Amino acid sequence: MNEKPRRPKPTLNRRPTAAPARKPAPPSTAKRVTLPRALSKLGFCSRTQAEELIRAGQVSVDGRTVTDIEAWIDLDTAKLAVDGKPVAAEAPVYLMLNKPRGLVTTRHDPQGRPTVFDCLKDFDHTHLSPVGRLDKASEGLLLFTNDTQFANALLDPETHVPKTYHVQIDTLVDDAMLKSMTRGIEQDGETLKARRAIKLREGEKNSWLEIELDEGKNRHIRRMLEVLNITTLRLIRVAIGTLVLGDLEKGAVRALSDAELGDLRLQASIRPITR
Image (cartoon, rainbow, N blue to C red; front, top):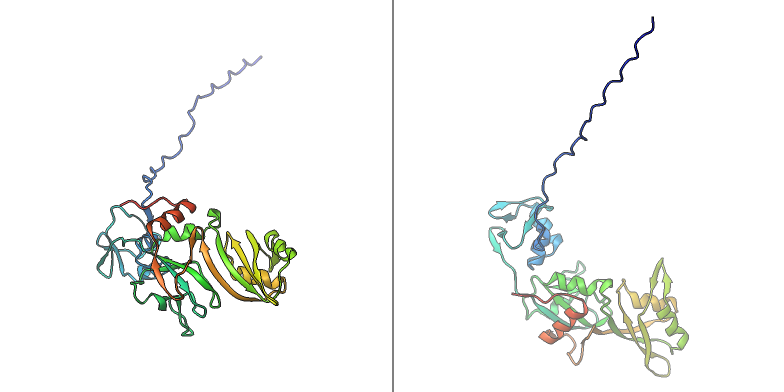
């Protein structure tokens, strides 16, 4: 017998499986930051210090103790306290120091050496931090602030805020040396480069240079000159952007003027603070 052909089974039109629903992302806000960052932005302490306080159970948010250093908060609404005392935003402070030679750029030195904070005794510097560093043997313009956004923008190589130095060296300079600095010098896997290098003046055995950097690697200028077999005799930072050291006396401190601060903010593309 001939079998009847079997009818193909109808194909079921199945809808594609729906993807699992996701929880809606929390609304984004410029004021939403991690708890350590919040304490830093408020000028209470550094982020590292904040993490230590949080882990120790000394920080509360809206009356509840928080020990998670990755907790997020809204700076506009959260009420922060450390050891039960409310933490509020401090007025931003911007100071400039003419750093003397022989001071280390740190708050506490394990070796007991004098620090740059010894020059700030007439100021409440509890929450102030230096903007960048000058090594012990270097002198000149050093900024202090409790405004971390301002400090980070000035230090960010992407903003290209130049730092200008006057440098005394132990030899007479020639054009080849200056071109080497602006072209870039390799040392220990790093390229050390000056944005600008010119001769200011020279004597019988030494010279003064003006060197401009738009980034600041550790001992940048000294290392760059060492590769050229040049010894740095003195190194003085005389300007950060348009802010100049001027006639500020050695070891003296003063607040930045509104005009100086505005110019620096403009150069670093920082929005002015509104209150």
